[in-house]
Length: 356
Image 1 (tube, helix red, strand yellow):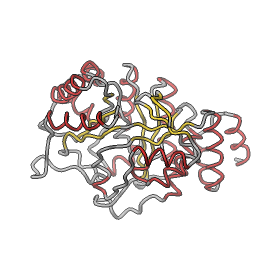
Image 2 (spheres, rainbow, N blue to C red; image 1 turned 135 degrees about the horizontal axis):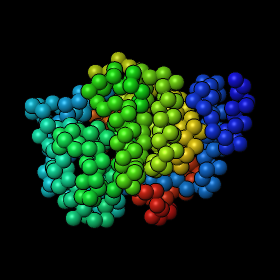
Image 3 (cartoon, rainbow, N blue to C red; image 1 turned 90 degrees about the vertical axis):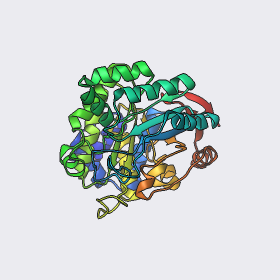
Image 4 (cartoon, helix red, strand yellow; image 1 turned 180 degrees about the vertical axis):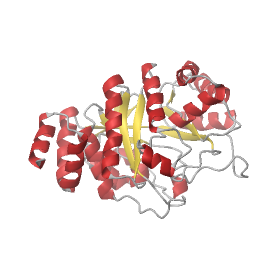
């Protein structure tokens, strides 16, 4: 396998295999893989816009029974610090988002035995009734599966009820690494790889766009990271329903996996780059300031990323693991401009609302 031949395939716009992706990931220097990814980015998106969205994560409950080893946020059903937000508390948070010009809300929670599908349906209806202009981009595949099983209905029926209530798109949460060997180790009670893919498939067939994600640095190999990308690419070939791909590194602090060494900035930039190169059918690659910090996220814009993610007025899951990076609109605009790009505020569907 000749490195030059693979690089030439990429430059010609030809699809590369998993084996070829692994090869260039391992053989190219950081600057070389960044340069190649930047070339692909400009070919796919020949304009200097870098987008961001003003959004808010609302964790409607912190109670969960899945006990993922990598999560520092959840608490058990009988814990004193367990909570479920009231309707008024949720609406107050959405109101604060709207007043700051926000357009997207992410409602996410654990698998709380005290909640069922009607509870989250009513949650969505309440938000849409009071703030019809807000895009509800919410719930992980794990939550969808949980509510479907609890109601003894299909995933499709569950998604349809949520869609009828006002849910318009699904985030990629719950993917972690789409390799069952890794999932069986770090989250054995969570839904399988195929289950994650099936929920995304059903949502996309119902006309709901979704994002795709990856949390790497949990003991997986480079080959398994590429296997994850391959599963995303295969589903995108079928439905073209993924609006973006968002990789970020696992933060082990305050988890039962705190013995794992955190993935480096080098690995993060390589993952951004290889994602842009390998995912030839996904337009938007998002850099992650929440986990990586503003400077690394800014550098990622030269490694194939074209989106800066969300303002995230509120974030608890990653901060529970010891990460507390912060960005506001002005800082994101400055960071994007400082990298030589034009900042553009977008909505959930990557439609441009305004440029700066």
